[in-house]
Image (cartoon, rainbow over all chains, first blue to last red):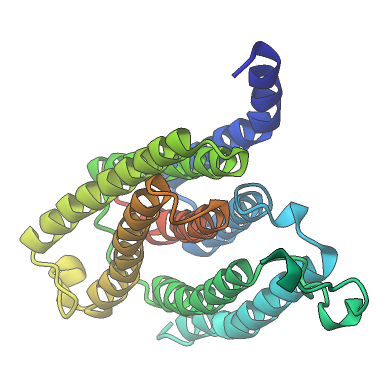
Length: 103
Length: 210
């Protein structure tokens, strides 16, 4: 591999190193949060939000969805988000149950 | 054979470009990933629902468990990076580096499996099974059920992934598989990593004793 080829290769791979580093940083933030002893529902909300950002980075960069055609992006992600949202609609019931307990 | 070559240019409509501008193996793997996401979504939902709705949900994961799970996360995240390298090498037609990076990915996956199995053994020693556990006075048996189902299914995916990558590396070396097969196996491996990005915080960090 010539010097120019090696440089071009490094340049192309740079975003992936950044994504890997950011994923590690996000994970470290999550571990630090575990030591803050937040209320479970608040902790769950923050962790879920951070996990969604991490998932988006993996899908867009590592799984190369950002380089696919728009209709593939929409078909794949819209169906997934709709199905998961429908599934998680019932999650608020978990909070209702805990509030129904003996006072 | 040249005189038998079929000329397509007169009838371009007979060979339409694929709808998603991608080869069928890639679309197939994406569809599998979508369906698998729903399976994992349901299991994560079940665990999180129990965690929020049951006040005395067990919190057995101490600093040692969290350090262990963090190292597992590092192994899996790094194996995703090496898989990206393998796909890039395959796209360049660099067979030697493709195989090397796939082997590095397999090492990361194996390290994850070994650390996870060791952690499971520790939990089983503490009396935790998929049916019962001593935590919280044994009043929340579904903790073991949801934990082992979720982490077990993920572990099965990682183990199958390591075997899958082994086959891809072996066949790539013999030039039986091409860059498309490496990319498709990469999609699967990144998905396994992606699922762990939810399991680690939502299962381990939500049930800590720190």
